[in-house]
Length: 79
Image (cartoon, rainbow, N blue to C red; front, side, top):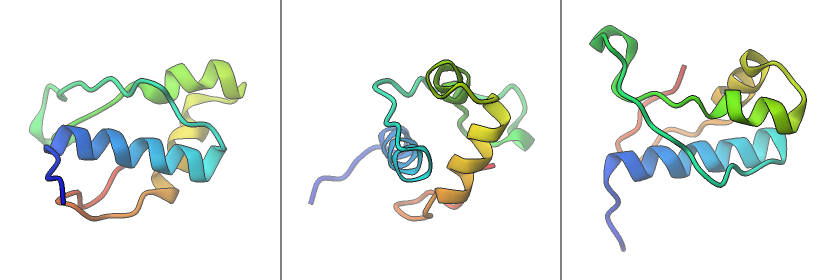
């Protein structure tokens, strides 16, 4: 079994959730670090990029991806 670093696990989880919820799998999942730890450990603007392809609001896409997210591998939740 390959052990992935947390950032790669996050990217893979986002790809999987986007594929399941939207039928779209992003090629790239850029990561950023929130300026305040209260906002989480990792963030991604991928919903803004997918909005152009899906022709939907980024917030709608983010909610769909969050709803399809499956915790595991050290990742507890996404918001």
